[in-house]
Amino acid sequence: MALKLYNSLSREIEEFKPLHEGKVGLYTCGPTVYNYPHIGNYRAYIFGDILKRYLRYSGYNVKHIMNITDIDDKTIRDSIAQGKTLKEFTEFYEKEFYKDRDALNIIPADKYPRATDYVKEMLELTEKLLENEYAYMTEDGSVYFSIEKDKEYGKLSHFTLADLKENAKGRMKKDEYDKESAQDFALWKALDESDGDVYWNPSEVLGKDTKIAKGRPGWHIECSAMSIKELGESFDIHTGGVDNMFPHHENEIAQSECTTGKSFVKYWMHNEHLMVDGAKMSKSLGNFYTLRDIVDRDISPVAFRYWLYTGHYRTKVNFTLDAVAGSTTALKRLYEGFLALGNENGEVVAEYREKFIKALDEDLNTPQAIAILWELIHDTTISNPDKRTTLLDFDKVFGFGLEDIQEDMIPEEVVSIVTEREQARLNKDWAKSDELRDKIKDLGYEVKDTDSGPKISKI
Ligand code: AMP
Ligand code: ZN
Figure 1 (cartoon, protein in one colour):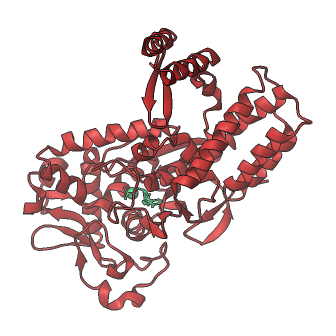
Figure 2 (cartoon, rainbow, N blue to C red; figure 1 turned 120 degrees about the vertical axis):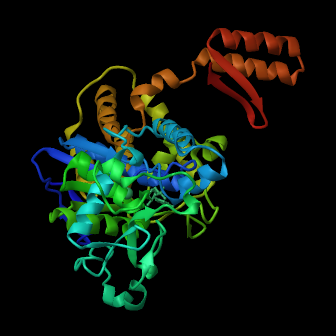
Figure 3 (cartoon, rainbow, N blue to C red; figure 1 turned 135 degrees about the vertical axis):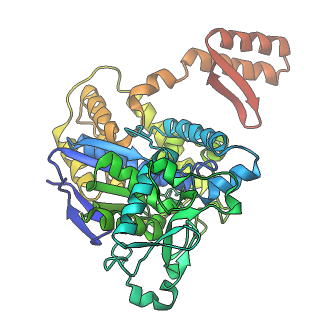
């Protein structure tokens, strides 16, 4: 058996062969820290996470880098609007992102490079592209990449400049645009009034004279600079959502390969969109939920993770609260089923492990892997200790946190006092209700009365 993955570059499922035996360099485009990510963004990060988990499970040593975009059109726009420095503004959302990541059981990347710490590397790439004439400078000292010079431009998104002839002439200063506006894109943007006081002086940063004007990097060059610095000029896998394929990843390839002359990334992997009523979930359409929004509706982050596995990463999935509520129930049943197995460990059941690997080797077929998990739970011929150990083995890939749930389960004693307190409240026996609330507190729990009944949580 061998791991096979869909490569957006070839548009084929290919056998995975890393550049260096036993090791994988993995890069995921990370969040732009101008707001809370929405759960569509988390589909992209959970996809990166299960890929990493499965590569590790398959025995690879994975180095995973995820950048933090703390400078782009949006972070500047919104920090100015809020009267904050760029750093103050972006630090807040970066921290919030890490909280969400932990709640979703996403394994932290090995490093989260911040774009603002790599401006020197970005300028060095820009200078090289000027030197070898893939880039040119405009009168104001901005630098643009000339897509016409790069004969391979379009190889990832599979279009040719001839298809887009009319539009392909001209320049694009904005960080984000669609295929129809494929144009020379900005590597470096000279300071303009919309940037406020966010700029770098290239001569100072590079420690030598340069004609590149005071200003700031374009978005695309950020990922080329950070990935090359952290993973080398050629690395194994780059992930992101399909909407990042053009222009962002196409431009990353152009900038990187035209600088180094080497193939940049071997496998490009893209997750499909999380949809709402037939449209992509996005900030601009306003049809989004943050992780907090779904938690407020009693959907746990891990239940969301479970739900994502029920669809293959390359298919669009339609988000509804009801659908994810179904996964909350399934996850609860899984936890209960797991706890009922007791604490004794046994052996991983080879037959199930093989089936599990077969499913995931086929371009990460998580719906099938989930079906195998339930088949195992319902299999009465397997002993409890073996079942438990096999489930824990699978959970290295799924990340449902089975190892930790014992601690999180609310003890029977607390549940029974809460029930007793509910009865007291129905009887309007407030004194008893308060007394029982204190008892619950003494046991380390807190009870909140909500419209949908009492909610218990650890203090
Ligand atoms: P952004 O912050 O816009 O660069 O997005 C972060 C990641 O989320 C990128 O990999 C996007 O491709 C991905 N993404 C954005 N919207 C969605 C969506 N609705 N479904 C799945 N992935 C998405
Ligand atoms: Zn990127």
